[in-house]
Amino acid sequence: MQLEPIIGLEVHVHLNTKSKLFCGCRNVSEAERPNQYVCPVCMGFPGTLPVANKQAIEWTVLAGLALGCEIAEHSTFARKSYFYPDLPKGYQISQYEEPLCVNGEVHVFVGSEDRRVRVQRVHLEEDAAKSIHTADATLVDHNRAGTPLIEVVTGPDLRSPQEAKAFLEDLQRTMRYLRISNADMEKGDLRVDANISLRPYGDKALGPKTEIKNMNSFRAVERALASEIERHKQIWLQHHNTAHSFGGLWVVEGLQSTTRAWVAEHEETVEQRTKEAEADYRYFPEPDIPPLALERIWVETLRIALRELPHAKEERFRRQYRMTSADAHLLVGNRDLADYAENVFSEVAEWVKERTDVEQRELPHLEKLAVNYLIGDVRSTLVAQGASVSTTKITPENFAELVVMLHRAEVNRNAVPEVLRLMHETGGDPSTIVRERGLQQVSDMDALRRLVQDVVRSFPAEVDKIRAGKNQVLEFLVGQVMADTRGRANPATVRRLLRDELGLSDASDRPSS
Image (cartoon, rainbow, N blue to C red; front, side, top):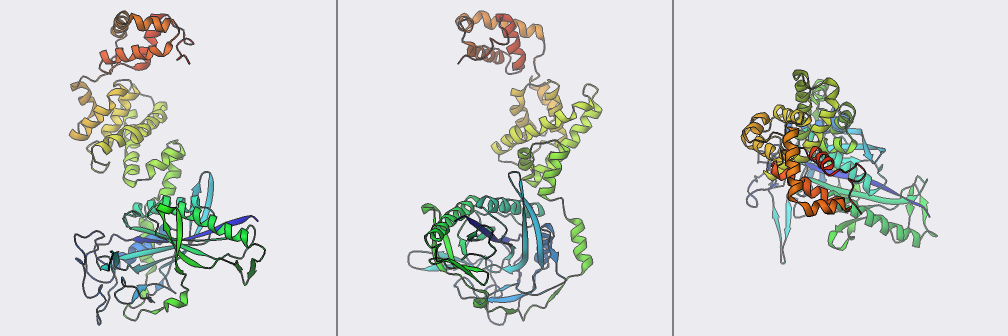
């Protein structure tokens, strides 16, 4: 029996508002002590009245617009009743029949395949408190109670764990681009419940569904789904003779709709409880919060202000700057880095206009060089210094100048890490740093030829090995010349001069196996 996975996601994203959703308490995800930021409203004291946070509503609409949703002109809150120690009121204020955002759609690339994923709804709700389990008690920290969450609910459109992971990575990038959430899974800013079922290929009925919880990374989501798919598959295969569909649903002996937790150390899911139905929550309209009426002109103002989103920016970077898909994906993954890169490309174009020794047709090569160094040396320098492009003193103009200097062989590749470090620390321009530190590339061919001759005379044993066919030893001699020039010579030029001095042909200058 050929079975098809059907996956839908319910994603909770913490919003970075200054205050909680229905009170004035600070919205702090990691407080110094338990129950530090609480008040009678978020503690659920009788007689208190909630007041909706306008910023949270605006950011929910912004997220909905970014996910291609229709924005409701009329929206309401509802009470969702369930009884856990971390829910102080005995119910959660959420949205049910009239959410803020509905009928969205996004596109996710998995390799070269473009997957369309429907976003059924994006609604706003408050978070619960945090339960802390010890050996003999369960403690409750209410700092998180009442913080604003958006819930993004997809259609059952994903067909593999890899597609689910790709959707979540894109969603995280989008939330960060909008500056409405840090969206860190490890810190609980982005939490995922994954719904998974199987059905025979080509069939329209849905199989028994499992909701998987307790996944704190994209990798955990991928592994948990793969594990649960395999578990479902084995049960289907054992009972396929008695499996039957009824009313649009498959009935499979040994499978029922349950909620399961992912246990990473055992690489498996474990059952927690049978899955609740909507009727179990006893939804009814929230009487203390009036309906929301969203003016169309306000929504359109938000739409106009919406920034270019990661998917569109990645497409444009590939097209406009002739990047590979991998390079564009890496640069666009961080909004600050993408903005910095775009400023660098603009400054490189200005340098090309101003310098008489660089032609316009060389611009694509300079842009490619800039991308390579942004992804490589710049990121390495900033990581080593515990900095980022938003805090570094390396301005896009100065970095563009360094790219042009590299292109014109005015500074050696080996000197780049030191030049970048000094640019980061001082904010100085690269030409001044290179001149003051004596890091100019040695381009005097006569001087280089003399250094090559000195090295050949100084290492006769190595020269004999090269002439005996051990051509990999040539790199040792290249290293000696580079050391004599303090890394300021061009290695390719040194290698060519050594070949000439030793009478090696191009074919003989290959490492022997």
